[in-house]
Image: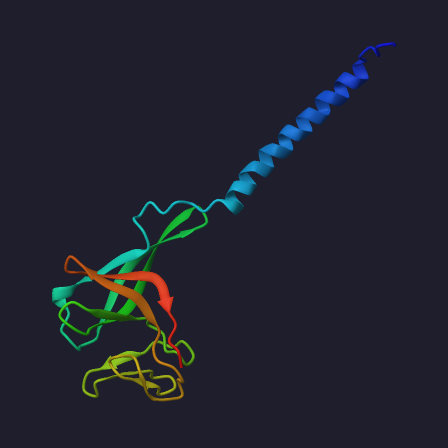
Length: 163
């Protein structure tokens, strides 16, 4: 049995392959982490405080502007957002998305008529979000909402209305 002596050529090939593998790993590991690992939300969950419960009147919709924190990849963004909040009871609220369910236009509350009106295509909705007049075929979409400690909180998730 003869043992083959290492040559300079084999040594250089081994070093070149090892360096190539190290460079490939240096690119592949961060890319895999970026694609496969979801960044942790350090902001405290998916709930956003939008208003004090005591500032809302029962049955009267209020347009609330607030800042929503969102994570896009590894970047943390603060976006301005809007919701329509209706206090339905002493300790219950409903939060509607600001877009009409017909074509996504912005609607507004008409206090004299006691209804939401979309000026683009004349859809009308009641204070509980139900369609009063088309062309919208389904009620207004809602944010998940709750009241905790006298504060109105809405979730990032949208409940699509059936209809």
